Image 1 (cartoon, rainbow, N blue to C red):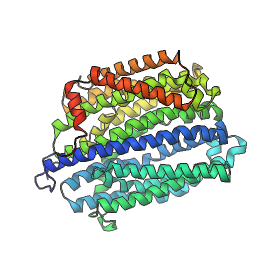
Image 2: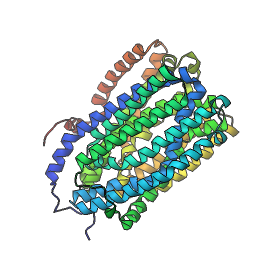
Image 3: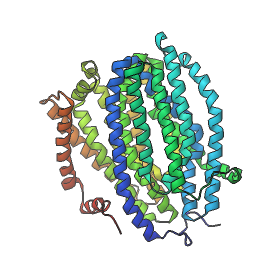
Image 4: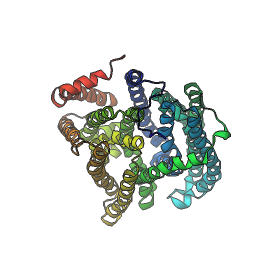
Length: 523
């Protein structure tokens, strides 16, 4: 039996065609990712003050809190979905239709079974929400309805996620972004309509989430049938041995993802348990910038993931090394701009966005976002874990770091009395240690290259964010931004200067050539 990393001589897709398709599809995927991120930013930034104005700070805080809970429930499906894309890509590249059908249907029927089991559990958990979290008496029934509908929408997402492997396997992330943009738009429109014309009930917000999930399911199934007509839904293709194969890799992904959630989705839960619903609402509003920056990095990193997996299937190691090094550098430089601008103009942004009452939390906002530059720069490297099936040690390290993050957060926030700043500081300390020390060293080892290969672009990112932050903070001492127009103009001006600085001072000739080459179509 041939190893999946051997060159596949009988594949119907030659290396030349693969290379041409990558070059044609990469800018399309990147543009669609930027479009999705832009929509996410617009809706996210506008929706927070809208919801706080109509629901209050306490009421708003339960919306992201409910979303955080769904992230933990998703761990039970990660063991399948985390591995199926890798094995399905390899099977399709080998033109193994029967094998691809076994992989797909094994995951499909397993997820269908899990979805059926989840529905009653969702109802039970939603009923006990007031006993788990601090919920004001007048919001008990609304919060129960909100959690039930958001968790139910998650169950639909669990079932529909299996259809998304077709977009990954065909490197059509533009279609996946279209699905997400449609779902996000439907959800936002229904929230605005229901709150404006029906009632300011949290349950209505949950219904909007549920409707968005349904749209995603319908579109996902449609694209699945279009992109992979050779895959058929049939119980005869269910293979228990394939399920063991998928979960053997996915098990370590679950461990790693659990640790990731202990970093990213534990803050709001700790805020509610340790403090109050009001504090949770404040923290939930500010952390949206953290989520938006992570989302920006995620959609960019997602462009690289299918390319790396397919390149691995074709044994193109040099291509993977070159792409990974460039991705870390470009990601760090890209994140440095919004992080630096946010650091410098935090006071003005909060004043314009949420009002004077929130300006006092500008230091907290800076603490939540400043460390993301170097942490998100290494994000593209984690796609190598799935491609190379090297998920054990990243999973163990991430899980242990996540546990440490919880203890550090409780210690700083409660025992040292740092409050919300303690929770934010814990993420900054522990996550930076994991991503700046472990990730560059480990993935250099996986690729068998110099241990310093990924540290050089991280240093460049640090220089970039320091320059932007210093310039923006200095300007903020002399210029007060009074409205969104002023914020946009300031951002545009700094962006232009920054791009010129990066192009002339931080890019080498090879960087310019590679960067421009991404947008040259054809061979």
